[in-house]
Amino acid sequence: MSALRLGVLVSGSGSNLQAILDKCASGELPAAVTVVVSDKADAFALERAARARVSAVHINRKDFESAASFNEEIARILIEHGVELVIMAGYMRLLGKEVLDAFPNRVFNLHPALLPSFPGAHGIVDALDFGVKVTGVTVHFASDVFDDGPIILQEAVPVNDDDNEESLAARIHAAEHCVLPQAIKLFAEGRLAIEGRRVRVLPEKDKSVIP
Image 1 (cartoon, one colour):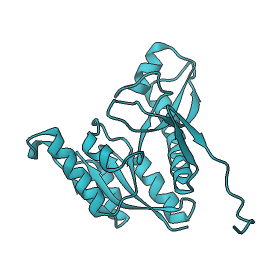
Image 2: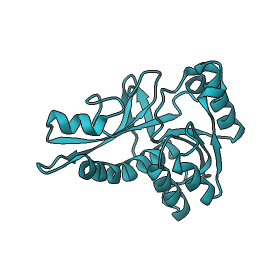
Image 3: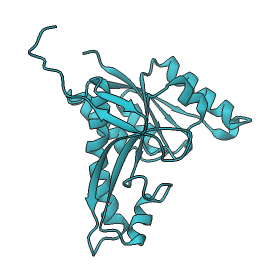
Image 4: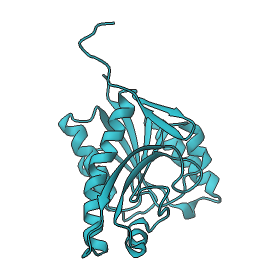
């Protein structure tokens, strides 16, 4: 199986990017990150990419007249690097149709809650403040609506009585670092089938059977 070429969109520290890079390097994930794109110049994720000798690109929204032209530039860079699957890993902007149309059903988003509960930029705090006993992590196909689109994988994370934002976030991030690479691997193996709002995970092919 040839390595799936990934483009990762980021806005912050890039801990999920690091998890992907590590699993690619170890051979656990049949993929390779070919470019990392950030809308923030000071995102530490860009440093992580540089250390891994991956192309790291900052695109400033203020340099573009419109959101459309900004997203067109993102799409251009991803295409230029031969990206096959786009990963939004802590990317804090709504991705435009210019990118979604260029990569139909090939854009993943990661959200730190069990969607459709607690969408938006404050999923961890919102779940904590609401008093839920269980929250979690969602990986889904992205759409032009925030935190919408068919759900690929979810993992539950219990909320403890003594949790604060920091302690809950630490356990959610740990879950993210497992679930996101798992979803990428399923895509790389051709095991995801979208059926309306549902994503069916196809059984693993029997490698002992020669077609």
